[in-house]
Amino acid sequence: MTAFFITATGTDIGKTFVATELIRHFRRIGRAIDALKPVVTGFDPAQAETSDPGRLLSALGKPIVADEIARISPFRFAAPLAPDLAARRENCTLDFAALVAFSQRAVRDHQGTLLIEGIGGIMTPLDERHSVLDWMAALRVPLVLVAGSYLGSVSHTLTCLDVLQRHALAIRVLVVSETPGSTVPLADTVESVARFAPSIPVVGRAR
Image 1 (tube, rainbow, N blue to C red):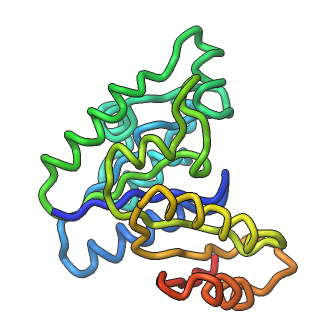
Image 2 (cartoon, helix red, strand yellow):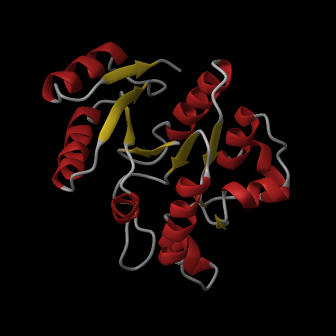
Image 3 (tube, rainbow, N blue to C red):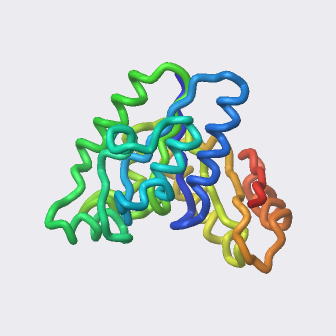
């Protein structure tokens, strides 16, 4: 069993894009693969097919139905906000202990490769005291860090790398996902990040 946590330097950077590409790659080579998006905000059941859980299920070849969505995304909120704020809109809080237990159980029980997609960036708040960083620290599985190619991404990416390395979190690969409409060429962002992070594999993915 191999598990990876897919995180990012911020929101709407390309985590699900990278996750679906990885799923399709593993399916092509015949490897058992599953993916989870435990926390999702801005979720509308009427638009399930275009949601992040829906895109993951489509890549997995699974039906986009309520049971499958609940299986991979048990913590769903309607408001398109950070999880702490989205939960507050529904007069509740995200149960961090339950989230960690769900994720740990999935890592323990899955046979094959498991992808766990986070939400937002590495410091996105989950509740009043915990962020995505705390979630990753509790799991201690290798990370796939996704960055954009927009102007300013290099600084944001190197800041994230510094935080993750200070918390002794292993980064398996850094994927620079091309930002639509960016004035910065994808290859230039890849080269700049790689120059400052020589110990981490850095790859670029065009949209």
